[in-house]
Image (cartoon, rainbow, N blue to C red):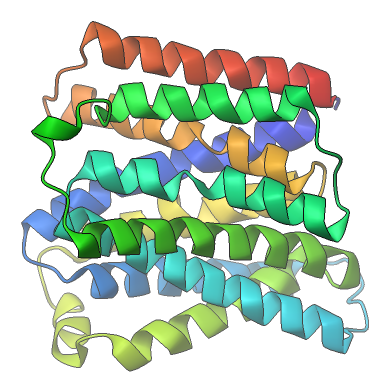
Length: 288
């Protein structure tokens, strides 16, 4: 069980990586990113509610802090899902992924400020190498080949900040309530927020479309299963470690593209994958 926390988070990241590929397929078929994000969370919420009522563990008496952190986690998830897809739409996948995964920098800085963790050269080194790996795997090392709009940059950074918010929300809500309760509240807030801003006609159209199977698969892989793994994992590790380990998501997304979408991975991209996996391995051993 020494590596249990890291393992759970890595399994969640694999699910998120697969969901990115599914989301790209749905966007190519004309579906709005907000609608895609809404169904990803809504189907996940069904899982969490079933888990809540099926659980035999005693329900903890919730405190106001628990509800506050759970709500903030839900807002963070909604922002992360939505801003990430909007950033892809406004720029490119490479730019969006690179900007979103600036989250560990935000996490680490906030952890230092509030006293969660000490600043060490080792942690800064891990962040540096993981970010280098992401730059290599996304191709963002060649700015001249990218057409980055202001909206793409802003929404990409907003996805990273939102990611930071739900990391801290889950981490701080967990000691005050059961994980299934935390997830149910967070994703209920998620659904309310996104439903208010989503295209209602598209939301209704999904239910009778031929793409309903893709939406269901997206919800199961990208939320229903992965977030259960993630919440168990984050209870066993620190916020900055969780953020960095979850970066195996772009590796999974790249493999999805190669195996199912016919994409090609260059030597540089394979090097980026090796850097990410190597850093995560070293980090998990040191953390344990």
